[in-house]
Amino acid sequence: ELQWMPIPGESWPGRLWTLPTLWPLLSFLGITVLLRLYLGRVLRQLDPEAAVPDRVREAYDRLTEGILILDDQARILLLNKAVGELTGRRDVQVGRQFEEHDWFADDVRFEGDRVPWQITLESGVVVERLRMTIGHGPGERIVLVTCSPVGEAGRRGLGGCLVVLADQTSIERAHDQIARAMRELQAAHEQIRQKNEELFRLATRDPRTGCLNRRAFFEHAGPLKERCNLEGRPVAAVMCDIDHFKSFNDRYGHAIGDEVIKAVAGIYNGTAREADLVCRYGGEEIGRAHV
Image (cartoon, rainbow, N blue to C red; front, side, top):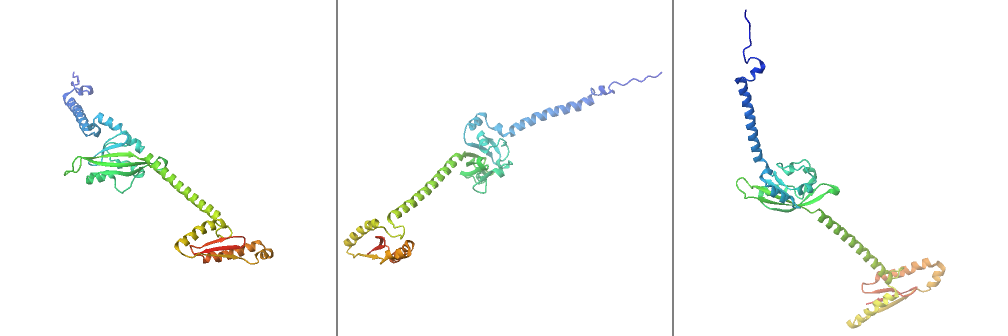
């Protein structure tokens, strides 16, 4: 009688404990652990934030200006908390270029066409207080950007760039308010000047003919006569009286009489020189001082 019995190790649980099966499993697990340790160390070396001591980062966070430290490819190595407050964004990522963020193209505007830190990284020059506007509408912020090169320029270029963002929003708004107040003040002064000229004209001119009134005529004629006497120049005074003016008013009315007075005064004013004085001396009397 023959009876078959399983050879040890041929069943499924037993196969797991055989050397041909355990060796690949142990090798895979070992390689996985070693690779994880290696990648963790490499990533720590490549992590930009790991290169900055905590005390330096804390010191930068206390500053009110936004601080960005960029490498030679304009990638962010360090940024402080003020950057997020100025931009209104909490998603600024280390290891990316500042202008690679999705909101940068729509929200950030410069005076020139080029990004200031790119100018510094390419030429090695310091860019000082370049105006940058972030956002739109009431929440718009005005920032002055200063970029300084880090390291000495060599065959591979600069080592990086230090970017300082100074918030000028409150100062700019204060300047705008002052400028608006100055414009309003100038407009008020202009209105006052016009009112003063109007008042002076009402006080010195006859409203119907535009000639000097009697009081203003004597105020100007006295100094004019004295000056002519000192300079030895003659001065003449002419008085015109419209004949039969009362009967003209009675026949045609005072409105037509006023037009007659205006017409006569217009003749005098039209022929008067700059130094001459023309006044309405009385109702229908018009005087003129001629130098």
